[in-house]
Length: 198
View 1 (tube, rainbow, N blue to C red):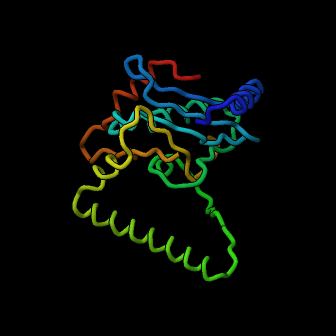
View 2: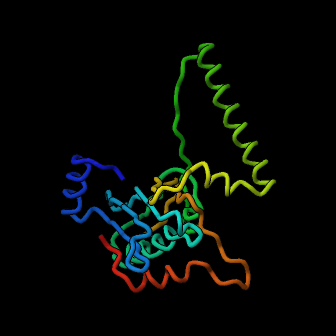
């Protein structure tokens, strides 16, 4: 989340008008996930989500998202939940629709810009190819974890799906296999039994 007096002052002024939502998820008295969602013109905006990476396998961000959605629905006053741009498992799980969006950068048709574009495209193709190889070898998840390090609380920004009437979490939620219990029941029970609102 942004850290600074200007952001804090703006957030507090907006909160005084009931245009901010914040949620915390606790496990055994310790915070494990947060969600900050400002409200603008009847639309709740997925702004910042963070979670304890040590609990990523239990999807604490997804558990908190579910609880936040239930509370927002109970308010019966918001028209949309905007997950913003990007992609994420939680967005596919909770969204009821999406809007295509793009960032467009216009460049003059010069040789240097064409080289820059080709380099950018080839870099991303190379990263995708390496990701596919790592996936085939079964090391992609461990490699991503190693590359990201292990900070105490990871924060993400959101993706472009909207949920009617209602960051990318870095560790996507996993659906349980048929006949196997979901792995986040403990966190879901804790969410129901604890006060998570900011």
